[in-house]
Length: 83
Image (tube, rainbow, N blue to C red):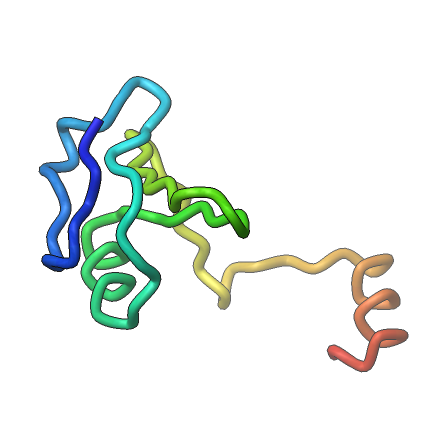
């Protein structure tokens, strides 16, 4: 497992574990997050724990214009003033 340092870089995605874990540690700086997201890498953060960085072999792409929101979800969103 790779422990990240202050240097902003990630290992190659093909080095990720079977579960998709690619690295531990580092920080959540804007620069690191942008680099991570551009490379399909995502942080999992829990206070007091090291950051776990994931690079899953398969990812979902959501196209907002194709999203279908059910009527019941629309009602919930309206009640929460989100729609």
